[in-house]
Length: 540
Image 1: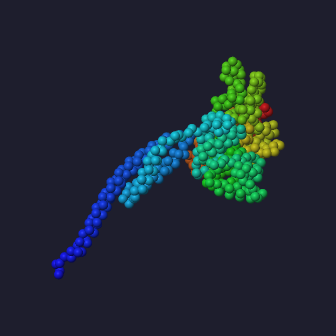
Image 2: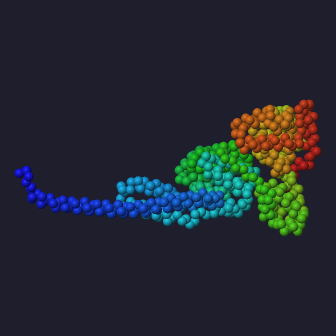
Image 3: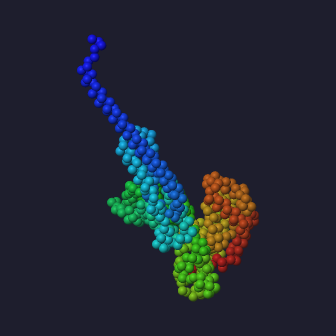
């Protein structure tokens, strides 16, 4: 019958429904418990996340406030920031899909955040960077001029766009001592794993440089040819885990570092060269140049006191000695090596020897009596050539390109050394003088020597008007505009050229426009004879 109820089936079904109802009830209670637990943990995670974000921001502020010139931040700080920057997005992603996660993941994440928050109290946060004097074992006094060059070198070495960096300064200025100290400093700062040093000098020897580099890198050559050695050094550097710094010291001639085995464009190494002038840095294609300035008068006196043993109390008891001592110190022209040598030689000596040394110093730095600066295309075979001949015939040791070296010298000094080793510079300012960047660089150097070495400078305005030069008109205006187009209007080099041209026009000089050139030249020679005693060269 359709309406009949099967009681036996009903009796069997009731217990099954009861068990199902109990299971559903139990699951609901468990989900409710899980939900409550997740809710509590979620609150803890959110609290710790906010705390972590706050701690991270505080660490960043403290990091930005640190003077990285004087203090080195602990590696733990950077590792902590890296962990925080990874963990914070992980927490934020978790909150978006919280119900898909399992309990253990919540526990692990909460523990990670809590632990990281507890580790943000860094001891120490940073440590002071020792002075250059420390890195040089006391061979460098921490003068401002040295610190300035050191800071500029550090910035250049940290620049990813600069693979070859140049440090230039006159002989005896302390370039080698500085780069060796910088080598120790960058190792301390963990910028480079190794610092390799090789001396270049004028007598270029590739094999000697390769041996110096190989010794520093623990390389044993399996081939004896320069090319085979270069490949071995190159492959060793390229395979290194951390970058190295290669220092080529006293570069006086152009060479290719890759001939030695040192890659020029590699993230495995950087190259630092020392040279005596900027032109030599340019020959090595340096992307950044740093000039090592002479010591200031105050710095020179401090260094002189240290090595001479003379002190202010000694000078106060003998005013004559005080005057002579300071003159001797300043006559050394801010060159540390010369200051040390002269000061040491005069230690405990009578004042008569101080005066004799002062007299010698005033002339000893001059090797060439007269240096001629001129535009070859304009006047080499005419006016300047005749002037050079007349000066030589008059007994003046005169430098004119390679002509002045035909007096017995075996090796030609660099242009920088020639200018520095002269007592008088005659600048022949002709129509196209400013067309030559070399002439302009010579002019800048000559005026620097006038200031630092009290060198005499005579401008000769050869068929040009000083006002045209001063106001950058006619050819001088056109040439300078061309230089600005090539190097940039705000180029430091161009600005130095402009300043030098303006300065030389304000010096007392001689002008030639028309008439017999030999008569004009004779007047220049006579004028030089009038000051011959000031051009006298003696030996210390």
